[in-house]
Length: 444
View 1 (tube, one colour):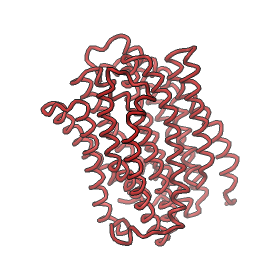
View 2: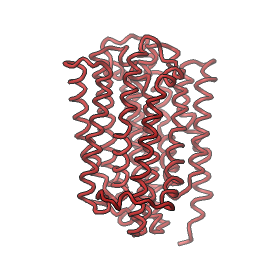
View 3: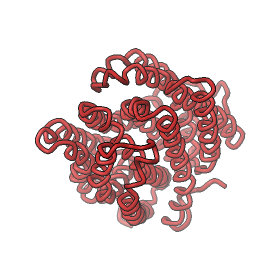
View 4: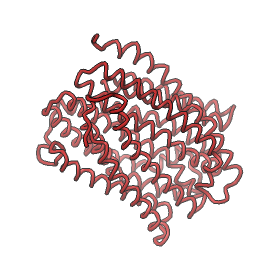
């Protein structure tokens, strides 16, 4: 079933659309956790640190891709809400052309920069070789990530949040099987985990593209798909590139955090990695609801349904507030289970690093929910400057805490960089949404 997000009770529509996205994100988390568990349990803490030392830079590229293709999806959603076949066809063509160009560019640049990146991240010498192998293979598979996210965002813009979930589940299960095959009988070490991830993502992308073409004639590949529409391409770049850039800018701050942690040694990296992996539960749930809200706002913005936008945004905020309070409590009560999930017989030092991270971040999840809701709403109405400005504030906050405040307050200041960044971003976004964007709506 495909959802027209301009119809029905807003909170019910958003919830129904969110659930498959949450399911997909949880499976995505599941197989990244499986990577870490298999690597940590079979290959040891050093291998886990090798994978963990690259986590932020991999996330950096993923953020750009998700932001870029998400921006393209917003324009398709607006065209769908407006019921303009011409604009929808032009949006699909522009999305394909730009995704192909960015795939080539990102793959070449990222693979060429692996050695400099590991130097910037202060990667410890004892894990350098393993880290290089893992990161190079992940970057070589950039195309799989681009096209899975591209087709997923197009499907969601047309009201289908279920198809991407089905293939992500298949991809997740395949990833675990390939992990075990490549690491155990084939002895490919952490490179095997990277290869398993790329192949699983590639299969998911190909199947999603195939099924999307069968479900929607609009998404069927043909010569018309690759027609060049200059005005449309420029509009997609205007929305997609700033969204990709702003999401990657946020990750630059996380790179500063990773670099600061890497200086503390292998135990700190292992503890930070373990806590960061489970912390992704909250991030992925919030992102999923944000994706649903983005498509909801885009369709209703195209249909000029202003009151539905305000009601949907308010409902999303209340929903995420409840979810984040629950997830924060679960993280803190279950913190003793985190490190043993990844490493057999962990040291007290690794456990301490993990616990400190969770105590400094989990109590502030409610801020993450607010940030996701109001940034997404503003973006989906075509405002790119305010979310970008908020990302600059996030970057400043993370770098300031990670590189300077940590000189006096240590590892906990590095961890607090995350909630401090959320606070700084909200100081800009909340006034913009309530004092500028809402007041632009015509009186009902």
